[in-house]
Length: 126
Length: 126
Image 1 (spheres, each protein chain N blue to C red):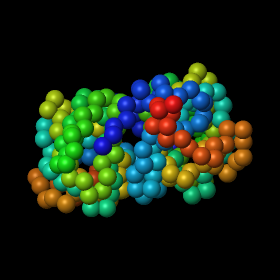
Image 2: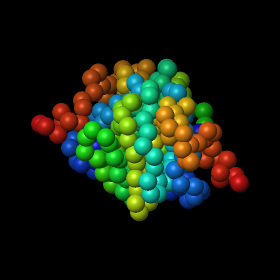
Image 3: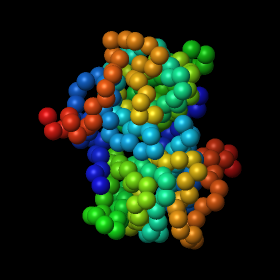
C-alpha cells in the first residue's frame, strides 16, 4: 500500500492549474494542483468539489455570496452547480477532492482545460 | 459557504477515535478524529477509506503487507475489505475521507463503535 507525501508530491511537478492524481477511492479522486494567479469562472454540473489548502492562500470567488479565502489547513466544499473562480495571487498548493471524472474547468472550455489527468507516479518516474 | 479551519476544528473536541463530521460531498464525508493509542482491527466491506495525517504520527497495521506509517502531510487509501488497525502511540490528528455512512469500527462491534456522528458545528456551539 503506497502512501503519498504531500511535500514530495508537490515537489514533483511545476505546472500550474493542472491537477495530478494522488489517489482514488469510492469513485472519487484526490488531486493535487499548484494554483497561481486567476483561474477561469466555471461550475461543475453534478459534482461537489472540496478544496484544501496545503500551503499558501487561495481565494474562491463566488457570484452570489462572499468570497471564501482559505489559508493553509483550511478547506471548503463548493456544491455542484455553484459558479466559482479560484485565485491565488501569490501561489498555493491545493488538494482537491471530487469525482474522478470531474474536469478542472467544469462547464467551460479554456486554455487550462485538462482532458487527461496524470498520475503522480508518472511524473515521479520521468 | 462555510470554510473549516483544521486547527480550530481539532481544538473544538477532545474525544479519541470519535470522528466529527467536517463536511459532505458527493455522498462522501470528511471526518476529523483524534487518534490516541490502539484502535481495533476492522475492515469496511464496501468502502475505501482515506487517512491523511494533520499532525502527529499514525501507523496503520495491515495483516498481509507491511504497516504504513504516516507523518504529518502524508495520506494513504485503505481499499475496501482490507483489514487494518490504526495506532497512534503518541497521538495524531487525522482527516478521514470515506462514504458518509461508513462506521468507524467497520465490521466489528467495539467499545469505540460510533453509531451517530456529530457535526463539528454541534460541538462548537456547545
